[in-house]
Image (cartoon, rainbow, N blue to C red; front, top):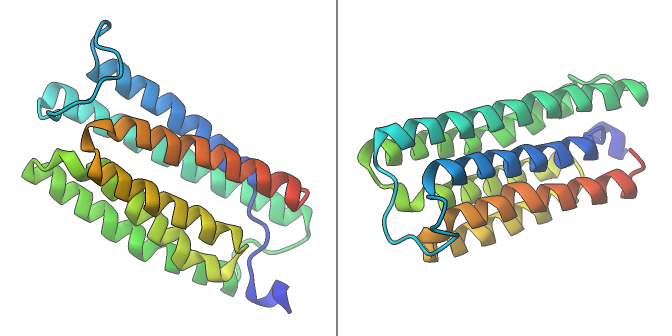
Length: 190
């Protein structure tokens, strides 16, 4: 019964790879924003200079695209190993439920960028991503829901401490994905 209502071919390795991409992207972002001697201090100002803003946006976009492409490729590979069809009614519902909060969040973040509200961008990314995971979790492993709750919690903390956005990104998109992917990989023997 679960096979017909749950998509169980998600790859734990895709979570690990997404986490590694996020950490690499955060490192590049750190190098773009912080000077060599500034350390990881609290930032009470935000990056509004287009010379830095657009490269940061490009880095985030590359990390997102790499994560999505890797996730799709590894999930298709996992489904084929199990003899399952990757694109079935359950996976379509999963993608649909995941996409609505994710695209809404993406549009909201673009509005924040164009309006110059940089202080809550990192928290918005984490919160909307967490909402997308929770919305999709009814069609896959329940572990996804808990990852979503953790992302939302980190997003709310990031909203309280906007000067530490890069730290919350590394924890949420990097370390949590590596932890989640490792758990999924070993728990479900992927």
